[in-house]
Length: 297
Image (cartoon, rainbow, N blue to C red; front, side, top):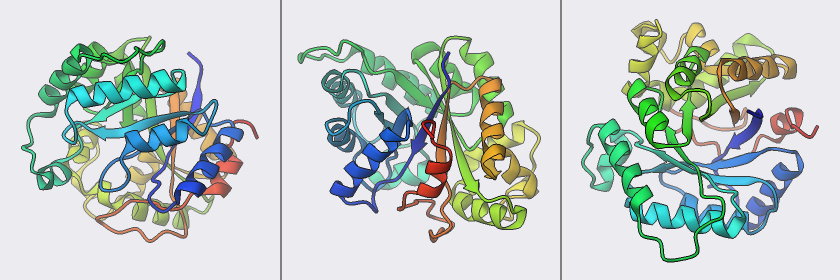
């Protein structure tokens, strides 16, 4: 399979006009896809439609749409319409999020494997009376545990793996088989100094490092409580993030590809951002990093 380089980027700090300009710039730099997150900010589907209408080649996808936020029929209709109108430049990225983000919306948390499997079955069975896309939107499941990876292998077109060591990608490839897509989102720091690079990575990952779902998976891979209960040991940060100069970062991406990734998704850490234990949102675009790693550069 071809190896692609993409970007995961929050857009809440960017005006509509500037967002179009940034996406076009990303397209010129040769990036394959822009993934749009979802928590409390812009709706990823309407934002994707806005950006797809303003671009020509780049994919713009939901990265990752919360399956509790809308019913499966709505997701199926949105995915079909976006893929139809863009000529197939949309992926339907779906995730179960975390109880801390789901329950305040008034939803009841249920086992994620059961929820995701049922949701995708309903997406595929949804009635769609509008023209069907010539290139249906691939369904990509966000997950790093064996259960959700199993659903990605049996019910979807691939998986989206976040904040995981290379070994998780190897396991994902074994579960999904040779033909499914694996998108690996990697927090990146363009800084060769170990102390400052790890410090930024810790601050940018703080809210994720505190989530139990990640602890469970890291434990399976040999990490222990002391690796995350103080904000992230050097060992953990080095395993789940990429930091260093451009050649070092590219070497890390190459290792992910060798483990089975088909797409590496940059998730830059920004030196000028204020991160906290309850927010990893980066409102700015890290153009020095994106320019340095540009596929068309």
